[in-house]
Image (cartoon, rainbow, N blue to C red):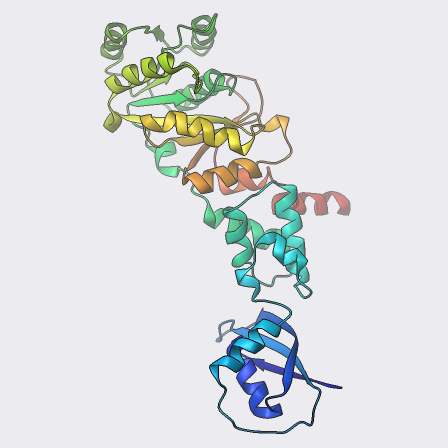
Length: 359
């Protein structure tokens, strides 16, 4: 039995070409889709290579391909178009690129899930450095909130579940802007948790930032009036849960007084949290508006891929990263470099490992 290789720009055209050259009795053995390398003045082009065989006598013919014949060939093709496969199906196919296998391994070790995972694999190019190619595609898929880093609104309210590092992150961010010359203040709405006001007041005293507390609407209005001339007023809210309907309504009532047009929302998400729990928390807080994400507790995990997957699926930008308890240290504004540094097998980690091995 003889095998023949045919290359065209699409699978359908490759089949037509094979039938034209070798006759109607050919059968498809395998298929490979790839991109040409291109050059200085030429773009990369898609190509489909099929390997076919004929159990009968080979006859060259120019017979027009019928639709039913095309469907038969499609059923007999052992390897479907890779761009239509899920990540698991890619691993199950008989023919796939080595670069795809490496990319899937990196995405898995970083807990990057669909739909972000599928988007990256669908557009993944042939590249010598899989990690760097993935890092570039990943960053182009995510949104970093540079605008509100540079130009925050008058009120910046921190929301998020209890234990997510909300108060500590607020204190760090407030200090960052005070060091940049902004006149800042803090209002805490968390009068429910024992020691909550004392904690934020201690931060304020240590950082020379004034702090007021507001347990009711009239107290919040009074605090807002006291800090009206401040450049930025940071609002520390109480952590709520889906089961605590009364506290959620209380928070909604207080947040309404701030005004959405004057308020930035920052939701603290621990890098250690499960993606399912992130979605549940966001559903709880989304009534207040669309927040930016501050990723916390990066020092307690090896990768931030789960949060990036959530941010992509929820279409939320990332604004700050924290990796420790020290105030005012252990915080940085979100950036491409900072995010890549917290992923395994991608970009900066790969380059750092290489530089250490060369020493």
